[in-house]
Image (cartoon, rainbow, N blue to C red):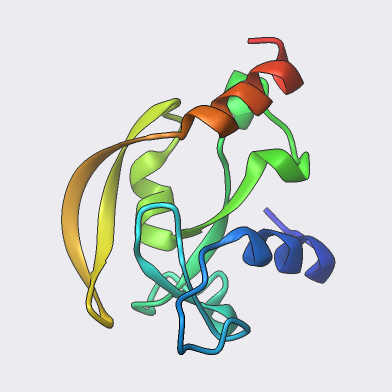
Length: 120
């Protein structure tokens, strides 16, 4: 999928910042994995990231900014069309990303917003 630079920036801005690091360069995704702004769409890079549809398009989700978030490429691939629970593949340990499978669940506040947005 192709997203505008404006949408990419809005999604990036929703990812977690870390004290002491340049927030324009590094963030953490919802699974705790490091992502790097300039590695957007680069599945070959350890910091590559993509835009995830939290409530999957296949289930009726769309490109509403509330439904979009930055996820490490491997976490996005592992999540697929699962909702609200999904498997994460990568998290951070210090300043390194490590492969670690973990079951994740979309947080309650976001689930509530999406419930109202998609009437599901």
